[in-house]
Image (cartoon, rainbow, N blue to C red; front, side, top):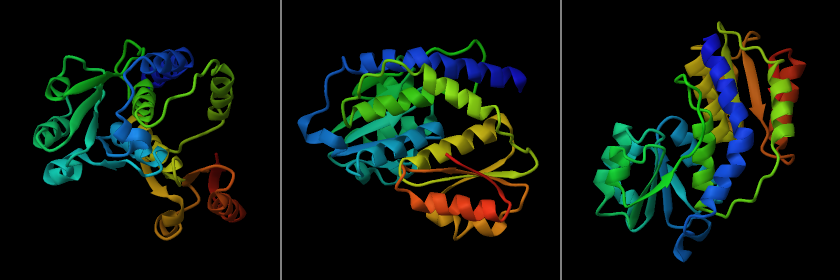
Length: 267
């Protein structure tokens, strides 16, 4: 595990330079059709980290686009009738995505793969391709840069991305904060969020499961108080992702848990 964590750390550090470079690349791609402005008539799908990216795209678009699970899409292909489907798969080998591409080919207006596997079966099964470009370590790791680039690629189909010049300060602050966080492998980590914070909660859950093998759950902030809260004990850790300063529900939940001496942090 130490080697895995170190390799993930290196890949996260790469993003300080790779994110601006990838945004520049995305800006060279043909813009979406005028009928798809702001995500209209677009559907995003993927599995695992890519599902979180698809859900984030839906929310980022102001719900003008939609997201779905690839197997659900195969079972109900009419979801994409006359729409532009974006299939997110880092490797391009995810079977559910490949099957979904084949099932909807005659129904969707267009099918585009968002993948690093430019010669993959998925890429060959789609009408178009957006390549995921990022550096990785020499070791196989749970997705970090691949998730970020999937987000950027998806967002770029909704609105033009702003230029980003310097992420070093943000990286340094995040690294300093992370040094003080301890995950107890014998307890459950709950990650809750609303709006765009929710797909990031799902992604965070995936990393805890993959890296530490410990229990983790992701939930919407409001729903957490109606379900998971009843199973909470004082060894558990609740990470609350605030969706902007107007997210008072997140603040109130953090305050109430802190007052009762539960382990919690508000981001």
